[in-house]
Length: 272
Image (tube, rainbow, N blue to C red; front, side, top):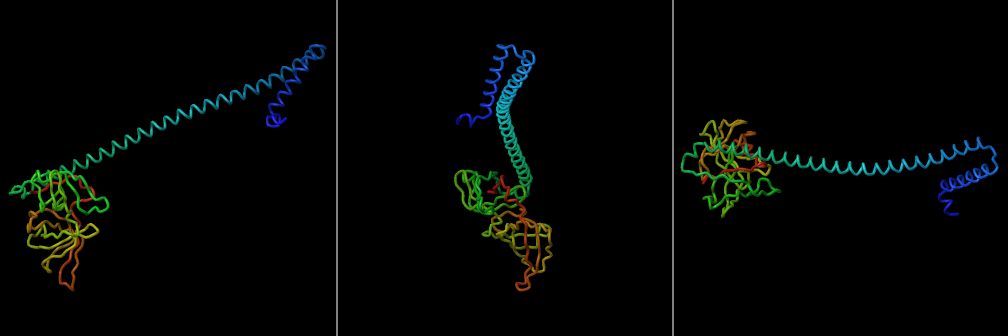
């Protein structure tokens, strides 16, 4: 009884089949209503068999849908993998393009006048950076085996990068020019008689002042290394962002944007 309660539809169909079978037997035995009853019986059986046929078709469609869904999932996985591969290729092409541009800039900067003096130049790749402090010390892949030593000037195609602080076989550490520990002597590119001093700010700019409070420095002026100290003369340091006069100190102060993009630095050259 419990089975019949749980399977009411099937139980009803079984009972109907039994009734139809009994009626069919009765009609054959008695010959009662042969034509009309046979027609009725045929219609009933057709409907029942049609129901089971439809149910079977639905089951087949459902199973087919499951397999189609599996094939679709596989295709989606294939497309996702192809997309990931294309993204990796695109990232690599961008990196290669950026490195090529930096190499081209290096080729230009190596034609500066100071390379015709007693300096040698060693090119190198940046191999290690402090990800938490983009203006901190970084490492390059050339060192003492190439004649690099502490105090050497590091440049790229845009200008002054920094100075070597330590070197060994196959490596050297570089302090960026925008570091707060660095102080640079500069002159205006348009007028070498106007000198000044700048040092790094924590925000990635350079800040300093002109030695002459009557200086005509203006926003947009390019400043270059003055040649005082170990840094060769004429290397671009940056461009003046702002100028202000400090009446308390009686000096003309400047804020400078560095020429070098330290966030994307990959290729450098060391003057040894």
